[in-house]
Image (cartoon, rainbow over all chains, first blue to last red; front, top):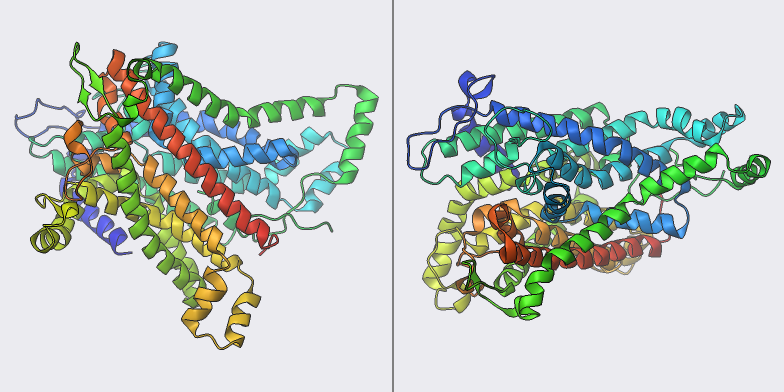
Length: 267
Length: 343
């Protein structure tokens, strides 16, 4: 408990001093002067935008795939194969994120020559997010009461139609909960991004271009030992990131308070 | 009503079995009618997407193996036992031993400290806390898990490090500095801090799985312990901990898996440079772990150097795989043994 309080306290206290309208909003892109020079100029608008872009990209990739995979596990996953998939899914969800970074680097950045890009970063984050979405979708679908399923069957519609239209709609809020919570989680991931999005100080210019992101920027700022003001910027960026993550988490958890205990505990 | 489907974590609504016997009959009926039906297509589609996880794991191992072939070809198993790290062309030499040990030592610190604290929290939450406290406290711990690791690292680098230096390392090196494990100057920028930050990071995981395990222990166990006159603590020790032993062990291994794989927080506070000097002989020395080295050097590496990093990656991959599989097996086993308790 104490570390949590300390983290929050320090981030807020130090971060607040870094905040200013100039720092945050639409303002000068982060300009990194060579080490040894005067304080860093600019703000983290680029990083915020990058993080948001990556979150959206990851959601677009991972949610549909995770949804289908979760449907598979819930509807067809009773056999041995399904059990082993479920098991591997859990294993993948705990995986070192840097290994995922290496994977995406080898295949996309180098193999397919996409290069350091937002797309590669999105794919890397999607791989991390996939097992979580799969699991939470499966749990949500399992929560749908028998009566709903029976009613769909009684209508005489095909099984796949029943699953998609009826069961998924009923499980919708659980699925959305899981998806939002996992997006919040991966927005803080930095290791896979280090290897896939490159380093950029400019606003988002295309999926195949390098992009900046809050966690990466925080890391880079922490290693600028000789530039004054870097630490302060880092605190500010950390504050933004933690506000983003915690707000998303708290909002989702408060909105679904008491429900979907199984889904929420999966994150 | 069929037997309720068991879910590891509590559900608040009725859980439905996915496929009833009647469904299977009607499916085959339709199949016989129409041959390859759209339901089959759906099942095929869902199954292929579901197998994506397997594909990802397989592809990862292939990619890592191919990438590390060069370095293993040149140094063989010596790569795993060597300690050099010379990247200059012409005299390249790579050895992974300091980083393997670094990973193990930091993870070791993390679980030793983390387990104690997590068990304490889990016991408190499952056995002693009044029920109105249970939910909010669990929420707070889950929030601790939501904090991104870079922020842990940042905080560790600029706040926690000085705390460790002043309250832990300075007394340690002043009074116990003659013990080899406490050699070195107390800067806080070292293995000890990294291990402690890691232990904080694994507390949410380990404590929540332990708590679930403990709460799944049937009350008959506790009642039996009370009935033979055990004190409160003895009830916990005999009735709950002993019974849920493998689940708690599994939780610890899960935490170990997380600690082994953690990159950013460790990189930011561990403060070592690759080479033979970074063998973790003292807690107060800077260190390097598998993941931190990959993170710092991957961007610019080429050729044999890159292959060496892949080699580190494959070691990390194998560690994580073995640990996670082992942990999952332990946790799954507990819930099977307790007979599938639905809350």
